[in-house]
Image (cartoon, rainbow, N blue to C red):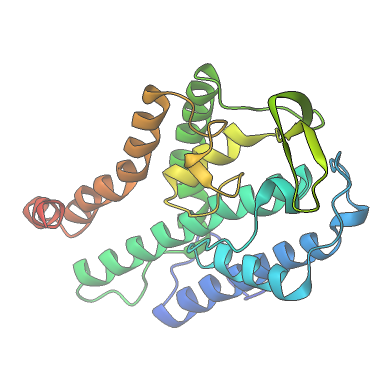
Length: 250
């Protein structure tokens, strides 16, 4: 707020609201990029992952800032726990909350006749994060852990293979590295925020992200939960719930 010269209780016009949105998400992009580039010296990196290459770091930061979360990396072999949590998980929250804030501003713009303000981006961002995304993510994360989704700071585990194989050079491969980490907390907001970036490279096709039929149902429900509810929210905000129901049907 201070950076843009606004107050938390101030109604913003559309230009200031849009500028607040853009500046906030640009800062998020820079933070996620910096965390990836500094990964080699950051804590909570039990597998000693090095710095992410500049092009991949920018691609990841940009996609998470825009809530598209397109992945060209495998999280279990590229990122440490600190970057996964402070960078990607946090960005999953704020990028989703930013999208919800823009919807709120859009609905106010349609509903209001003479007012010049569209609300306050910072208030909308905080409310979406604290009142909606955080409580739902906490509940979903606990439920996912109950189904076997991993949530740990331990090193990756090593297990003997039942049927040893050979690598491309003909060497015998008799042991397998099993990736673990604080996955459940990231998967919860990944699903609820309709974000694409998961803890593991194959996302919810990985058994440690989605181990049971019940976890699969909960994750599918979580993807639809907030978008479906926001159609009703839109109807409430424009004072015509029928419009919200129409959007839901469509």
